[in-house]
Image 1 (cartoon, rainbow, N blue to C red):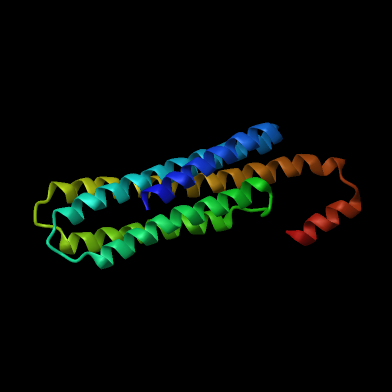
Image 2 (image 1 turned 180 degrees about the vertical axis):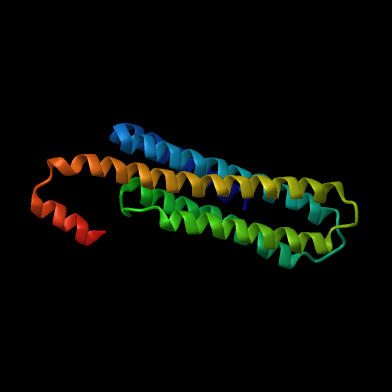
Length: 178
């Protein structure tokens, strides 16, 4: 899982470099903000998964369920990557899927921590570290949501400015799409 998360972080960095080459102005600024927030989220997920290995090592359980939960969180990182790519490439016009994915990661993280709490030895310092890592994931997913909403607003505001340059037909098409 650690390798998959590392690959996701690398892919996000590649998307950022590609965006810097192909985009400019508001589009580049929005892409950078979205990709930076996603990078931070993926890296915080990586820390969470690493800390969960310490908790599992310190407990006397089979840990199959926790492993499944950690896979769910790690899978969320890959879905976040996919949605960030769609957003940056212009495949989607809004960041709703990115927001939903970030919220799903936060929910999976909560479920993951609760599953580990049940199995962790009482007073475990490793579990305390896992709790800190989960707060990092929660904060980073909140940042992804806030960034996506802010970037959506910025893009909509920039479109408002460009409406003066559009023909009446183009304005009607845009209204219908919205």
